[in-house]
Image (tube, rainbow, N blue to C red):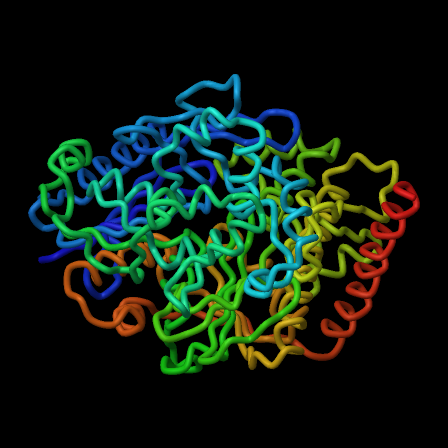
Length: 541
């Protein structure tokens, strides 16, 4: 039986999953990766550390599955939109002038290039219309400009600047072809015209990158899932415990792999056929809200439209929340009762958030009434700025309603209030997309928060939309495996996705009191958002 390997690199770990051709998960494994934070919102990783984590996870998954390497028919990679810098022969180069050479990855959440992003935005180049009107410091062009201005030795010595997902296929196959997904979404490649814009690079001061046919950032660009010539290198096969020449497909960003693994999924009340009415919400450290349409839709504050960047033949709009799982963990950890609650969770052998969810449901008596525990606590959890729809990296988090209460009960209320705040951020994105003509009717969720029944209930009630949970517990890994299927079998990405992805269950929105409560609480959320803007303006005047 042919099986397919999906490899996913998130912010804190590398994962490997083995799937049958009907989308069933056979085995998966995870291995942590390192991150080095530096003051100034600088975050670094190591491509070598990431590769070794991938190899450990892959070998473990193969062992757990009892799989023969010959049965692996195709491999797909996905990764965060971090940037990898390599010199001659793929050797690592440091991101900082005095940094460790091995720390050659600028992590997606790194905001060192905020000033460069602002200068690019001030230029008002027409290409900005394809990133929601404003360039984010999380994108690669501002980071490249930062390198040129602050670490010229690395900038000059670099033979290639890769999105992490492209680096992984380079490491696996030796091929420098970039994915249409990565370079269109994060590097300003014009996918619909199949070209880079040399005038834009000249305008922002990166004309060097246009030399030699844009070789350092992507001379050749291909569709997601396109098989790379030669397949797996012998050296990479040895590292992974697989066979040389195993087909490898062009990769995707992790959120986009989650979209591939969910947006075409079907159930009795969510038939496959037209993914344009669905929003795929992929949640991890951050969250991405993905929609596709047959024609380009320009939405201020929402990245895109990107041609073919997730599904061939469709334009992608990509909203996002820069801190999602990270915001929930951070805010909960601030409470005085967090340590006590963490010890209770450890004693029960469960995660802290699982314990808090159970306590919340028990306290409210009904899952549909849990949100009302946060009646008097209101949170805007924008700890890493507002990616969408405000495109404001300087936005901050606010909490209203704190009392001198160090009880676990109050921690539970804070937890519920944070879930509400995260859902209201998603509501803002959906409202903006719908107002611009995108016909979103339901939501399919994936990632860590998707496993929470309480989160799905609050999201359904606050958006007024049905929220679908995929049948697989690993939809991002499934999306990567679907890329491997394309590399092996060819054919349509969306058809493979529809065949391999299914819906497990759905949370339907409740009307009446639940809807009225969220309407009021969301107004409080908006008041806090406005307060943040006014406070920053006052202090900066």
